[in-house]
Amino acid sequence: MALTSDTPRSAHPDDLGLTRRSQLTGLFGAFVSFALLSEVSCARPNPRMTARDWIDRHNELARALKQGQVSARSWMTEVERLAREIDIAELMADVNQSKLSAASKPPTNDPSKRSVRFIDASGTPRRLAYAAALFDFAPSNVITPHGHKNMVSAHLVTNGKFRVRNFDRLRDEGNGMVIRPTRDFVASTGTLSAMSSARDNIHWFVPKGGPARTFDVIISGLDPKQPDFDIAAIDPLGGRRMRDGTILAPVMSFEAASAKYLTSL
Image (cartoon, rainbow, N blue to C red):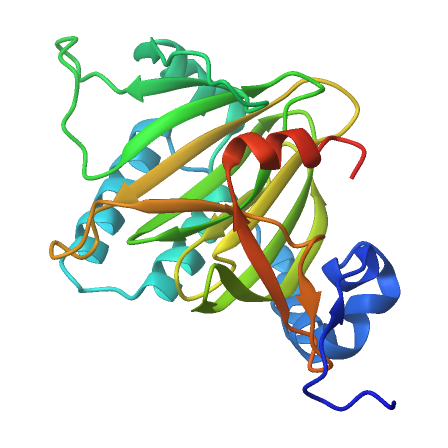
């Protein structure tokens, strides 16, 4: 029987942006626009911000987002711009002088997490509108594919390299999420990957070639009527892909995701 546009089939790695062919057609227009904007941006040298100004600007953006003065998409655009204006070594020097608190080791294959509390001139921890954290990846650690609600996050690579894969979360359906692949790229030191409900809500991070680290900015509780955040692991490789390119990916436990989504994928 011939497949129709509504006939599902098993998801294949090619469907998830794991090959060049799978994304060229659907994302060509977006890629060209992004490339042109990047070329213009690269033509203009960006002045470097001090680490303190950079931290303050993130705080201003976080407050504006929480108060509804900027959209999630605008927040993403601005934090991506800020990533190009900070010297990573200077930022990490400020981070190393802050108050760092290690989280308990997770039962999964996740990286180690340390919460970051920046301090003021008197040594007092600052009250910011966002949470900050360091995630230290051993070569075997993976952030498995998962989706978010009521939060945004930005992940700045401060050491090493990652393969980053993103998906738009189109809707929830039964015990799964209907998603569409958006990006598949290698992020090196200085590269930032952001997510929100508006774009790239699903992400998947795999370190490449050794240990790696990200500095994360996290803003939760965007809707005071809802829980502060909700995070659910999904199984894109075990999902069903429709002819329109979307994938119905089942929700799975983080333990099951950690056992399946290894650095080899």
